[in-house]
Length: 159
Image 1 (cartoon, rainbow, N blue to C red):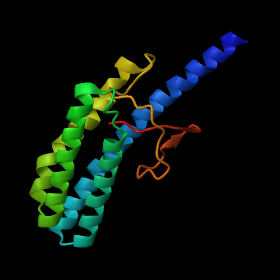
Image 2: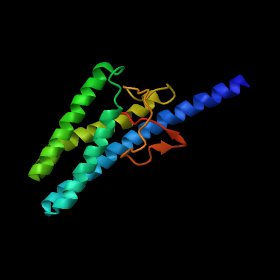
Image 3: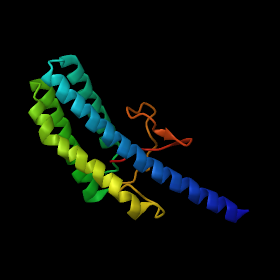
């Protein structure tokens, strides 16, 4: 009986790990899509659309920022916090100036982060952790990232 429970618990943890990674990839893919849309909207003078896409990107970044475990994450958490704050600042600047060239400057950062999470799969699946900065806090119920409840589990999206 205990062996079955242990095996089921292990499988549940593995599912949450894979789901967390998948949600992070989806978050970065979504932000990349929003940035491309904002850039195009700026070029065609669709100011409201550009604004809305940049705001949505910032909401996701704020969610990732709030999910960092600064207490246990050490230098990685601190560096991610600095990076996310920098990106939020650049998004604000791009929005205020309606400057697609600012989006061009930061887009590779989003693409590199997305690629890093995608490449992490072979090294982490089955090892029990994905996030370099695990969080003990439960996810907030008002998550700006869709599908944060995967497989009946609610979890904190990490970045």
